[in-house]
Length: 139
Length: 388
Image 1 (cartoon, rainbow over the protein chains, first blue to last red):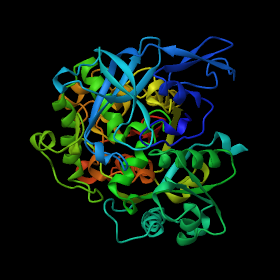
Image 2: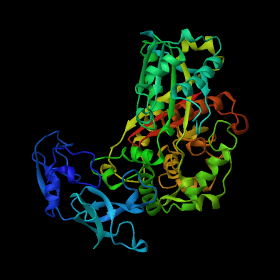
Image 3: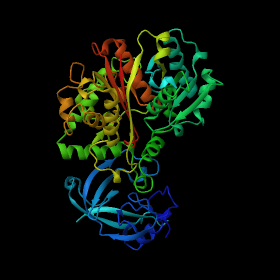
Image 4: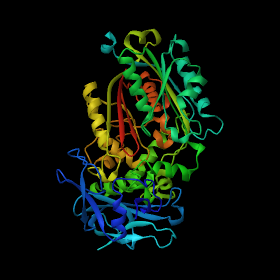
């Protein structure tokens, strides 16, 4: 399951962290860890920011975190008009790092910054092609 | 190399009308302020200009490689010309490279044109294009937009500091008030708080009146060193401090979502070089691409403590007569934001203010001014401090 299947529209089909999509397809949320200094990254990075090393390994993330901020997008860009309005959120992950995605099944009056949330790997069922993504949900 | 110690000043300015300019090509837009700037610079002839720097974001135009077509159209061939790009701060980046080229002694007199014709694209195409100034690998795939990114900042700022939607709306009310006095502005009408708060949703909590408009337009300045400046102007406006910094492309790797770190760093550099404190800034042009951006700018530039930006506008400290008058030409909000032109437009306004030529919106006796031009969602920031 190559990286090109990640996202409703994918802008970066080729990447050194290609295996991310394959893990996500199997229901696992993975980040990277520098083999030299042990620094962890989500979003995944092939190359270490901290010690300028290019060897990494995959580490699993629990998907648990808290909502750092959010916004409901009414004016959608090209390619997303069909699903607007949608609410995007930024999650501070429990293991460190952040993630951006759509909020799912959280009533508007219950959305609170810093609320506990979980990240759930998903496959677009509305689209014929296989498209992988994840959502931010209540926990 | 004696030039290295000489000050760099602005001796001429020009500013075209911003807005929907479906009447002109991009090079025709560039010609307008170029002509004005030459006329504005006493004793200057076009042949005296050594080089032309163009600040613009190329993706908006059908015409590729803009400096080529602009240099030809304004008659600068065979002089040196190049493009600078730093998203919405491309104009300020152009000024920085012009400053470097004069300071190094490579060039004597340089023209900078900031120009953009955004409206060759549809709003949806612009939303998609601008959304991709975030990280495209991990963010844009969820349909992020430019207003959406600033909305993430707005919601976090409101949560963390208690900033209210009314305080945020006050920025729009102020900037449209001053925009009503600027004949070059896209929107020259005042708006009420009710109108701002009642406007259509764009990206919660930001509404139509929290967002600047995509626009077409151009601005131009002529720079030279101390030695030449006196030939061209009785009152050159000196560039006393320059700051430039960058921040993570991805929001997900930023330390927080309540300040623009590149602005804090760029401001620090500019204040140190100019030996100026924030309280001494008598007039400022800041990057209010969204209302929340101006509130963060007050804080990031040190006009008020962190988290107090909402209070600063509520107390009218950014109006003429307040502590630091901000965007008294209407800002991006009322002028419109032709991305490449904006940084140059800011400098043009400060030069007018420091020369005492700003008319109805003149800050009385202004001698020190500042520009703050943010590229993308803070990926780049340039701060310039100018003095009479």
